[in-house]
Image 1 (cartoon, rainbow, N blue to C red):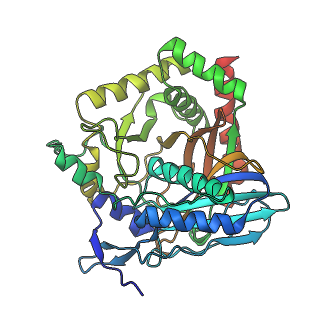
Image 2: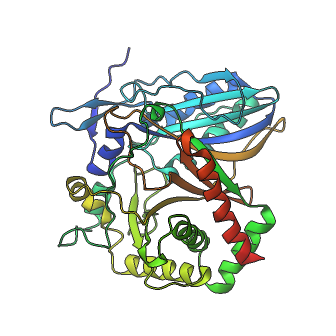
Length: 409
């Protein structure tokens, strides 16, 4: 039996996810023959290649958490028969045992296969790279090839990577250029022990291509266009002036610091950008303002040093701002390998948290956790929320889609 040892204490950027026990799920829906033995072998190979996936957390004497080394054994995959549209069936995840899991929900010849990673050790960009390796290993096992991969070291924190590059915290208090921390939701907290429901808008391949073309023509990013559609919708839904909206979103720093960082070399390599419209404007103009604000923040280094303000934000928790909008963009999901007898048909996201029952996880006012991604050439916007708000949140998603379809029609 292998005894785990302390790898290191978690940094502040990682501690906040450990405090809430946040696991994020990266799910593919498949059609055809799913070989569970091959999937289990592939997951075991992935945990050997990425030891942090088999690691666990222990509380430290100072009130934080310690990252403990992997024992080398992968958690057993979970398999249930149910509606494959349900990505995770009420599993309870324990960060004191393992920081990853694989869950399968089967429905005749279709299934969802969800890789869950604890947010304290892997953000979406990191986890999507692991997801691609999982399916590559699975394909190799089915073909009778070895799934073994090179072993990766434990990822480091963004604080350590910034320090290595001489990036320091800018002087002065947290300003309008820094994100704030919202207090917790007033919705029932019991529901957060199981994954929230999801409302979604899913553009077609043609609509997504048209949006890409519009971005090229106007010199703005897809993120800018989608963000603008969301902000315009939120102003209408919340009955606020556009100038009362404040937009906060994470930014992948891997290629925005020098030297650049590999996808799995760090845990949460995220900075934060904010944008506040100064006048009522249309969607394309709003997208341009969002993009220009981000480019300026990256150029002067403001965005890169935002992770260093996390301890300050934790100490100055504020009430939710009525106009606050928070969106996470995972970008393009990498191409996923699969054997000939299995077809990957869709990609979905999920999130679950094992929070203090007296608190519940933070929520932005009026909405839920909003995640953007593109898979198979189709843009997806998913809103994770409590079941009690399902109708309201689907109207939100429909409004986002209508704004985007309106600008490309």
